[in-house]
Length: 248
Ligand code: G3P
Ligand code: MG
Image (cartoon, rainbow, N blue to C red; front, side, top):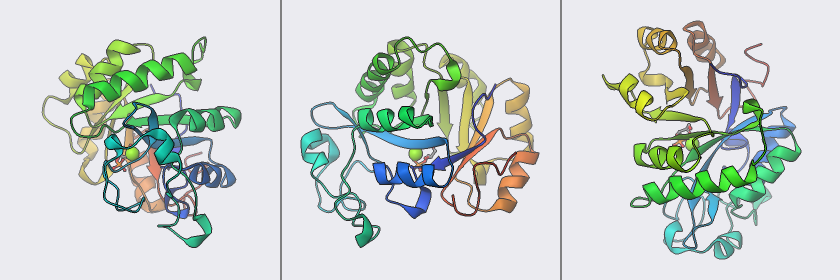
């Protein structure tokens, strides 16, 4: 049901390193994490890159949009200085670079498909097809990434393009018809905000046979509590407080 690690480094190195960068991946690894979540978006030339926000301004300076910027231009942009001078010059990595790093280091990936508005279907399709190529011949499901997305359309497209790559549906809170939506997506897991989850909902998701993943849990006390509810796994920004072996 959940054949992966229980504790997952959020966006690479949580809050200790710039999110969605190779420096973030190295930071997670340095803290012993062999499981990571990161966000993937398309550049203007339809190359999957690591990025959370569709517009610049927070992690990358400026005011443009990712969907109007090529992967080559993104590779020359600074995605590290916003956090601290130590990371200045850290580029926006391509998804391919990050997959290569993770596979070389035995790091499992939860690939969150994060489409720019209006690019939901295309992002799901391109990321899924590309992942299929990168992992061609991989028969061990524990080594395949797990896709997740808040976008139903993106996950539907991923399902069509690469049905063999597992999917988790990301929901801020559980609607009444969550089970129906998971069935339509042939999803293996439900991903949700721990703040909105109840013990009863957790039990219902597990009873229905799905993996249950929570974002983003930053205190050991809360992590312990939801694990007690049957939650399978969670991601954390505080990789310094909650280690990879926290859940045993
Ligand atoms: O995939 C879990 C979590 O990353 C979802 O929210 O906004 O941090 O990408 P967000
Ligand atoms: Mg994410």
